[in-house]
Length: 298
Image 1 (spheres, helix red, strand yellow):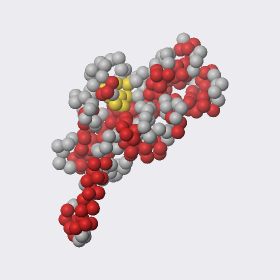
Image 2 (cartoon, helix red, strand yellow):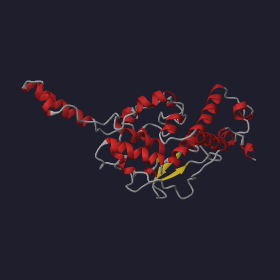
Image 3 (cartoon, one colour):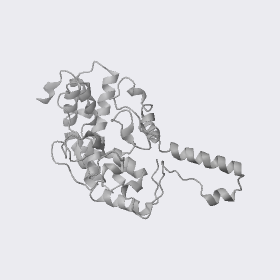
Image 4 (spheres, helix red, strand yellow):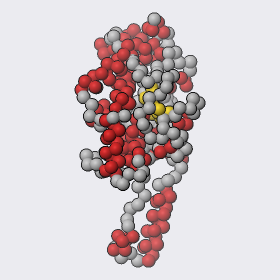
């Protein structure tokens, strides 16, 4: 998926129209050729809207074969495989994948300053959760999730953040650990999991499908301008929250690699590393991840 410099110049992975009737007439196809071409066009359009669940099971990263909760997939791998599900990251085999949007890209979208980024880095070090899931969500005028997928809820979602589970009771809770601090969108219903979507999943999909943002807009140029306006205004805080999560994830990835390289490593050895000294988030995360490390929180 590519977002170009000029407004409206974006790829359209779900585009179904290719050649106009005037074009096909101009190349003087024979009746047999024209019939074959039209038949192939019908098949192609039908295949463009197949049931996405039929291929989602074949999008597993090699690190996910035995450990689907380990978020070790590269940005290149994710960018390639997400095209197979039409940029709907939530359709992949695990919920842990993040889109290949860098901190620099997030910084450029709403025109953030270096001071803004440094504040995000500090919030990550401190393990700051701005919008805890247990409180009323933040209303940033997000589009209804039904615009992303018709089965989802038609009301506007609110922004929340995942906290750090204190002591995961089992594998199911441990899987959620890798999304600590991650912002997500959810309707106001208390028990409606189908309407849960990560903020970055929504942004990635909208960037390649501006028509979902405002179907009534007269052109993609207008939709692009609307998108930029949202990023600079009501979506600015959510973007800052997403950047904070990416810095948290950097810490998590470093810890994951340390543990995979040395399964006998202790919490004390991790915390004594230069990059992790006096980092509150690392202390909380390590205490949750490693067995018998609860004392780090006292």
